[in-house]
Length: 187
Image (cartoon, rainbow, N blue to C red; front, side, top):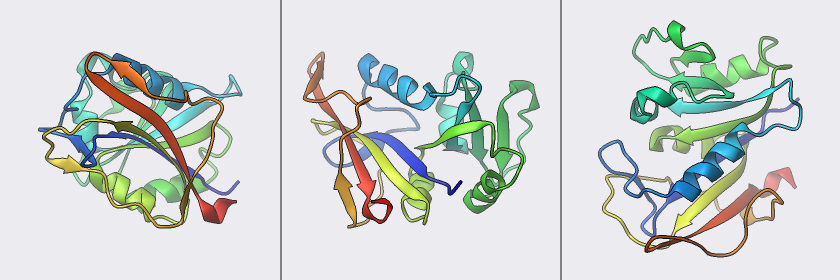
């Protein structure tokens, strides 16, 4: 099976995704959407893989580590001892992570691959030959951010996905939309 990377992110109007290693907004609906998308599989015997950078791992509250119902891949140049966490694997590079996914160890146990951040991991994913889809929550407001989503390739096309809610969503004083873009080379 050829690898297909799904990238999932939320970004505000200036494409900001974070501030001080945290989300600049609190949207329960968006977090529920993220959990549903990255956890749900058609085959109950399989799990999805979530790929994240070390800073993203560190930004997850201790009580939510590892992300439950998913196999957690953490990219870090540092030696991390995360054996106590169960379904957690550490890789020194994005390429070594992909090489492992193409090997025999994981090929029959996962259904989808989700890249969940941060900005450098997003950049490597969208520039990768395996980049398939971007699930982007557009926050229709500008926030003060110090971390941004990378520029998208020009060969992306907005597509429908039946599992993604349509229309403008609202929570508090924040409006947002769920959008899906597909790399046209996968058409």
